[in-house]
Image (cartoon, rainbow, N blue to C red; front, side):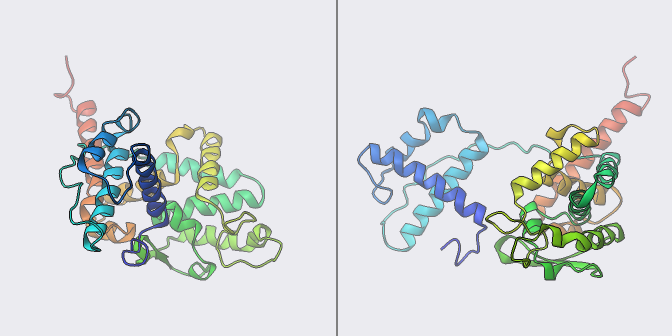
Length: 290
C-alpha cells in the first residue's frame, strides 16, 4: 500500500520493514503476532531495554511505522481497533542543519578541479550539481542520462513519491556537466550502455549514495575541511541557506528542494536568524561584555 498508493520512497519502505520486523521478533518471544498484539505488549516493547535506548527521532519513526500499520489493519477489517491510539510520540528537538559557508563550498569546488583524471572530473560535476540544485543524493545518483544533457538549462528531477520538479542549472554546473559527459564512457559497465547519468559497474548500475558520501569526505580532506562536516546533504543545506541569504524567497526554495510542506523549508530561515544573532553578539559594540 505504501509503495503502490502513497509512492513511498524505497528508503522509507526499508525502514518501516525493519521497524515492523523488530516488533514482530519481540512479540514472537511473547507468543504473539503483529496482527494479534494488545496495547500492553506495545507499551512493553517501547519501554524495553533495547527500544528505550533508541534516539528520539528513531523511536518516533518506529512509532509512526506501527501507527500506519495498525491503521491499515483497521481500515482493511483485519482488526476491530487500533492498539496504537494511546502511544506517546517522543518530543523532538529541532536541530539546525550543519551549514557550509560559501568559502568552504568554493574550497571544495577548487579542490575538485585539482583532482586528477576522470574521477576528478566526475567528482567536480557531482559537487557542482549538488550545490547548484539542492538535489537529494538519492535523486542525483538515479538521474537518467536523458534528464541531464550538457546544453540543458534545467534538470527534471523525480523526487519523493515520484513527484517531478524542474530545477534550473547554473552556468558553472552546466560547464561541469559538459566536461563530465565527455569522459562518462570511462565509467560504463562492460556492456558499454547505461541509462544512468552516473553509471557504475556495481550491482545497482549507478553510483551509490554511500560511495558518493565517501568521495565527498575524501574531497573535504583534500580541501583542508573536516570530513565529518561534509555529506551530500550538507551541500543541499548550503544550497538552500545561501539562496535565502542572498534574497531568494522561501516559496521558490521550497519548490526547488521538493519539500511538500513549506514548514520544512523554514528551518533555513532559523539558520539565517541564528547566524545574524551570532553576528550581532560578536560585532556590535554594545553586545560585547566590558
